[in-house]
Image (cartoon, rainbow, N blue to C red; front, side, top):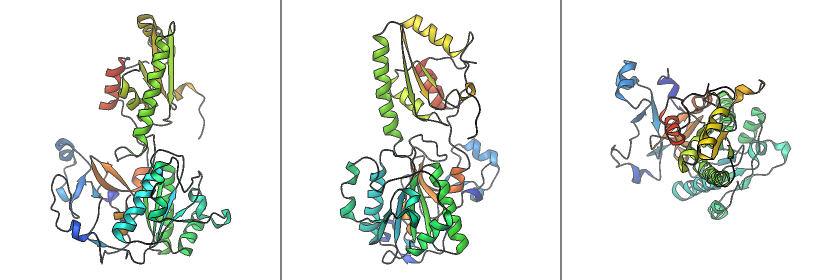
Amino acid sequence: MVTLAELQVRTLGPTTVPSPLAQYVGGRATNEYYVGEDDRILFDDTISLIQQRGLPLEELPSFETGGPRDKLFFDPATVRVGIVTCGGLCPGLNDVIRALVMELHEHYGVNDVIGFRNGYAGLVPENLLEPVQLTPGFVANIHERGGTVLGSSRGAQDVKTVVDTLQLRDIDILFVIGGDGSMRGAHRIAEEALARGAQIAVVGVPKTIDNDIPHIGQSFGFQTAYSRAAQSIKAAKIEAEASLNGVGLVKVMGRHAGFIACYSALAGHDADFVLIPEVPFELEGDNGLLEHVRRKVQAQGHAVLVVAEGAGQEHLPSHDETDAHAAMAGRTDMVVGRRRHRFVHVPIPYVTHRPHHVSPDGDLWLSVLESTAQPFDMR
């Protein structure tokens, strides 16, 4: 069971530098739209769950709120910021880079922001990837382009070498935009920096179209992914309907979590069956998938299946296999995400210790079953 201690975010030290944004946030009172510096967002969202813990209010597990602070750890006039994009591409990467640069330059007055090229590889000198100076002019129109202007790569790099580079280039803040693997790398970088006594804030910006990072709402790129998948499902249905006993099969991303499959099926209500990694099924037998598909085709003349790439693994042979505000305030080893429509700070170890899955007993999967009318159990 999660505890308050697990959700505490590390800080580099006391905040003593007046923020340029203080005049805008200092007078804001806590209300349904704004949570003050000393307030927190509860982990549990029902009275019964809170009562089950039997804890006093101040000990209930809760998240630190995101957003601007009136006092900072870093001085905007002297701070140097680095940004890196890691892992696979997804929609919105350039938007995030642009938003960070514009917030830092225009609101905080930070004049030194660099972008490391090609993921963590750009932090290893032997790869000869010189960083890019990021200015408002450089990022002005990058949101109109796909991919990432910084480039990306997969795979871990030697963490000591990475921190050596950060220290050599006098980086005070590193923003890591990436998925769960990139967040684990960010945690190792933060740990190494802290072990050296280096005051480097490492802040993660979660990026995954699979939406499988726990404890936050939708990560950027996810909505585009499932909306495009819904278009493919619509096309598959049209083709299946036009064919004698037609069967449309749409495979979507989701190696460990079926969120894209679920949301894309709900977006258009065109799927007859949705298969996700979290819900096992049998292929053969009276209650198996193939028999249910046969009955559906017999009844309506066609069928459409949406399959997450990780669905049905039990049938295969086994194998091994941001926030500028938080950074300026000296938070480190954390990610920024939305939880119940509010920005919160979440310690990186807490979002990487296990993936986020679709609950077979939750509202999302029940909505899918209602939409497709497929059996609750195919085992």
